[in-house]
Length: 113
Image 1 (cartoon, rainbow, N blue to C red):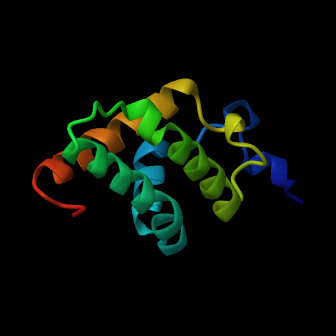
Image 2: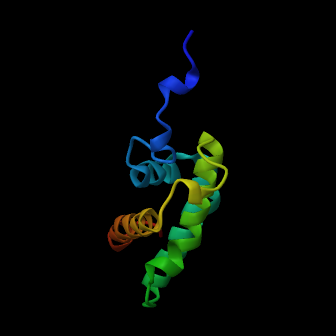
Image 3: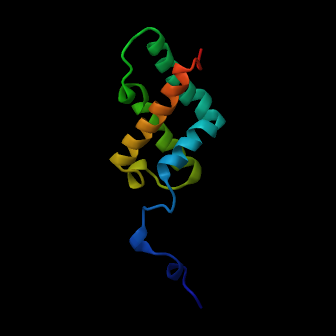
């Protein structure tokens, strides 16, 4: 008889075998509900600010949206009850920076009109 615990390594608990920042970024852009209700409005607001010549601060524009992404991602894939169990402050900063730099490139090319 084999016990289930023999197949898991509890020392690695909370660590995932893939780049969580990349995966959450993919989720944000490809989950139709999250994209339509949260991602697109945040980036559109960022585009409006850029067109008006206002300073666009990545944390102010995307911080709350990224936190919602972490929550939705954990809930959808049943990874953890709260995002803090999986994601570090570094993950949060990396996701905000990744989305900001990629979307600002799109905005500067004329997307999000």
